[in-house]
Image (cartoon, helix red, strand yellow):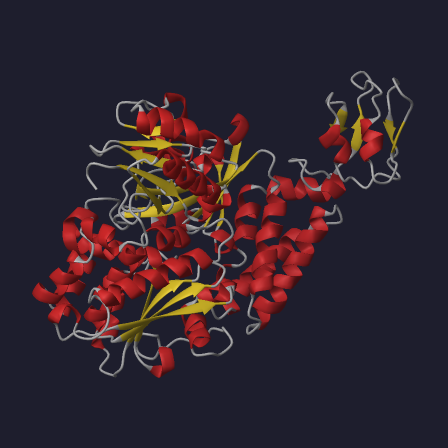
Length: 592
């Protein structure tokens, strides 16, 4: 293989959605037609979703050139000029040794532990994972470490659960290990449901064996012999690659009976969830695996004492588990050397929204929001003004511009009113209405409420009705107090994290953007010009050429006029659909 060229196509969900499969097919056809001695492979997402489709060309000496925004039409040049003639196409390069590009900044400040293999190996090849020290951590644990030693190592690393709560992982394992009841179960929570979040999906698609190895180490540590990966069925590629990885792990002796010649045995199954957001909560997830409706239960007893089928159970999320092999191989001190006093290691974030370089990043804890959004993410699209970033998804909150220098630290983020969450980071600019954002997230949590708790079921519905009324220009000043009162009641009376955190987007937008609520209520105006019921569309006479395009696209004939004369918009008929604004070529439509 060393004397051959390798061509690798990024075929995570983002790459496939951008046309990666067509690029792969075009490469295969081109290689076959030219009878090239080149190996064509596929990999997961390297994190640069904004540059998809990505194609990595690796010469026989191992020199890599990553091409961005590749289409089938570019394949001939890549094969003819680069693979055959050995001349890389500079203008298409995203990353390459000796070539300076704007994408260098995307990776410069990252520390890739969880994402260490994503985009670099074939997720369907256990051999490539092993070539990157895969399963060596498991071998070390089984041969040289007792369960107590593993727990001590994880505790010393400072690893906290990356699913949102941030509970110390080693402490969680210790609780489960101390339970005497048998059998015990180990579960991977891959039920990623936050809008704008895709961390777990990308890891499962790009490096599934790292999660399996983390689970095996955890299962050995707590004394579990069976486990589940609970992954939503909406992730078909992740599920497919997990199945391939599990089958390969069994064939190589990493799963099953007497693993690696030890007395440790572990069996693993995949449970495909139906996509209920509440099943991200541990007890609701357990109920779903048991075939019951996904609803939380009162704790205690905690899962470590009475979990799946009433037996001791440990649950960790995908990102937490992917850290484990690295910590075992590199040592607790190496992990703890990263981050802040109470937030160690690195954290994966999904950058989405109004950001130039959207995708997946992994940064050391302690880096500021400003560094992540502007240095790594490249800033705001169209160089608009940054307004806020939503962290923690529907359970989190909106952090405003004046807090951009907040470090990424569990306590610091919580102090803003948001939460670290699983790692969603939705960036907003000046065109984003914060009242509408609160309405959007509350609409999500209201729909996803399991209905068990009255205040969560009914209270979120009442809050949503208030927010919809405000967005329509029908709000009253007492609505603000009502939202705050309902928020407090829902937070204190809900059984699980969904209800306890559902009001956070409303509370943080009220805290930092109360003036926008007041503008909607008092002035019947949306400062961001986003809430259509509060907008007025008029024609700027001096800019209107009388082309009549606005009249052609208006669905209710509200745009009226004569050719080559300024048109007008009949406000009584206008439905505020915005078609005239979208189609006008002369910027002659004013929105107020």
